[in-house]
Structures are given as C-alpha cells and as structure tokens.
Length: 77
Image (cartoon, rainbow, N blue to C red; front, side, top):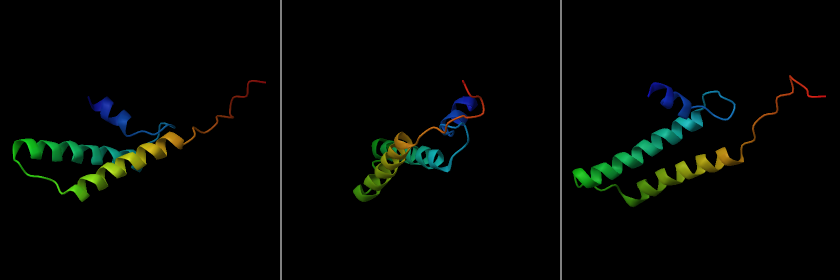
C-alpha cells in the first residue's frame, strides 16, 4: 500500500511533484465531503465543491499536455 501511494505522487519523469500532491489532497477532500454528506448530513457549499473539482480537472489537464522529456543519453544511431 505504501508503494502505491508513493507511485501516485510521481510525475512522468519519476520524480515527486507538488502538482500530484495537490491533486491527491483535492481528491481526498472530494471523497471526504461526500462521506460527510452521507454520514453526518453536513453539506459542502457548492462553490467550495466546484472549486476543488476544478483544481483536480486543471491538474489532470496539465498532466495530459505535459510532455515526457527525451532521453538523449543513449542514442540509437
């Protein structure tokens, strides 16, 4: 399980990234707000929920347009 969480926080280059950490925290907040709504009947204001979801969407979009760096240390020619 520890290995799984470490892999979640890595970017395409294999390094730890703050963006992945922020996305993981925001996803945790979304699940937490959903559980609070179900169990304790505490509702999250819509603007807070939409802002957290938009942060996750922005992070995922940024990850999708990020290019993996070329490895030129081992040429194939």
